[in-house]
Structure formats: C-alpha cells, structure tokens
Length: 363
Image (cartoon, rainbow, N blue to C red):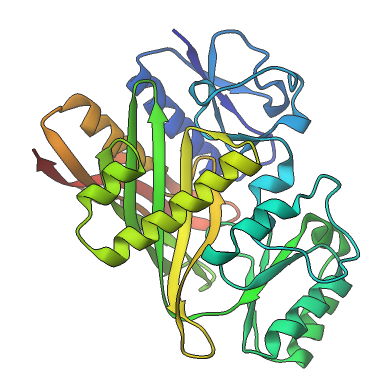
C-alpha cells in the first residue's frame, strides 16, 4: 500500500496550497492509506511506496529519477516528457517562419489536432506574436492567452492592430519566453468539461458545463463546473449521454486525449479537457478543444466526490457533482460535501472553494 504524498513548489498562493492539502487528504481516504504533507516535485519517483499528488503536471526532464518508468497508478495527475507539453501552447502550431520555439518542440501533435481546435498559433517572441495576431485580425478579433494562465485569468481580447502593438509593448520579455497562444475569439460561447479520473481499480468519465464569475477585482474568472459522471471510459460516457451534441463534444476531447498519449507519450490518471462551442467572426458554429489539464484542477473536488460515490454504491449508474469557486466574503453552502478553502488569500482576496454531490442515478 502506498502513502499519499503532496508535491509542490514553495511559491504558491495559500488557497492553492490549502486546496492541495484538502484534496490530498481526500485521495488518501479513498485509497485507504496514510497521508504525508509534502515533497519536492523534482524528487518525483524517488520516495519508495509513494503515490504523488502534485500541484502541476510532472515533466520528466525536471525529475531526479527521470530514467525510471512511471504509470498512472503512481500519481494523481499526469506525466509528460517536457514542461511545455503541459501548457496551452501545445494545442496550436508555430507561426509561419517562427523565430523561436522550445528545443523539443514537436509539430506532429499540433498538426493532428487541427480538426478539433480553434484556429490559432503558439508564439514565443514579440515578433511572432505580432505576426500571428495580425494574420488572425484580418478575419476578426483575436484572444491572446499566457501559456501558464489558469482560472480564466491572463487573457486579452484584441480587435485592431493599434491595440495589439500597445499590448505587446507592455509584455515582459521573460513572460514571452514561456509562450503565448494567439487564437480566434469566439462569440455566444459555452465552455464544456470532458474528463477522466482513475484511482486504483475505479475509473470515471464525465461531461459537464463550466460557470464563469467575476473575481474580487471584477475580472472574469472560473466559477466552477457541474458534470455528470459514470464508471468506465469514454464509450461508457457516450452510451449514457442522450444528446448528440454532447456526444460530439466528448468525442473531440477523446481524440485530443488519444493523440496526447500517442504523440506526447502522456501518462495520466486525471485528464480534463476544456471544449468550447461558439460562433466565429463569420457566423459559423464551431467545437474546439481549448486546452488540457493533466493535474489537480478546478473540478477535482467534485471529481473525487463522484468517484467516491460510484465506488461505494454499486447500484449507482451515474452521479452529478459540482465544484464552486466564489469570490468575496461568503460562507460555504450548507450543502457543501467538501470544503477546500474558505478565507482570505493574500493574492486573490476573500474566496471560498467547495464541492457537492448534486444527484444520484440508480441502475
């Protein structure tokens, strides 16, 4: 039996660390094993008989034991060969005649996902960002996203070249080296979550809808996810879903996932894909996988509640669960089944993060 060990870098916001501890303890309860507090991410795989719960996707190039072989039962999250593969930039190709890219950049993955993602580019210099954005601006507005941004932050919509150049002038060169995504901006959008979680001998797959909210600075932010989860894999999920559009969204996430395993050598026990449905500048409705999450995410609290319920009650065919992120001074819902954080975060201000099981469907 393995001990559950948290793994994180030291410079993290209190709400993220509190959430990590809360979810790590819950995973230990599900697995029926001991819980240990923390370990260095670089030491992944070096501590015997440990099941890791890292805050970020593990990049083997940064690990001490990178020559070892790891499987999905060694951690909650994912493992990729190189760090950039776990960020937003992996979804889109480089701009034409790109002046810079990560040393281990692979074109194959970007090429093969083009049919299920929005039109866009990944860039690593100001020159490439301007070139990519100007190309897309000829068709409509563009959205620019930092490769490492999360929670709905770090995004800017640009409508013209003047605004574009003003935006680029204010970017720090060090941030540019980490990468940015430049993609077409969509209207009338809904963002869906498609995911899978595996812990020991039980796996769940789910489909749901994300909510947006505003943070304490009145900026758009992730507000949570409500989803329906079933035991098993993608086909078990599509068999349960009745709506044809929902099935298409799940299949887009599945294809992205299949290619990540095939091309990037992804190994993961927690996989979540944001899939957008919206209208482009020419009025065409599109489905596009925006990005991946192979780590603890905003929906993980609800994922654990769903997995726990399906594990403990064999008569359940499916469950609905929700995660919530609420800004401002408020108390968690009295119906909360799992509270991850409730208090004042020095960076984000007052906020509450919790989850609850919404519905159970028996066989």
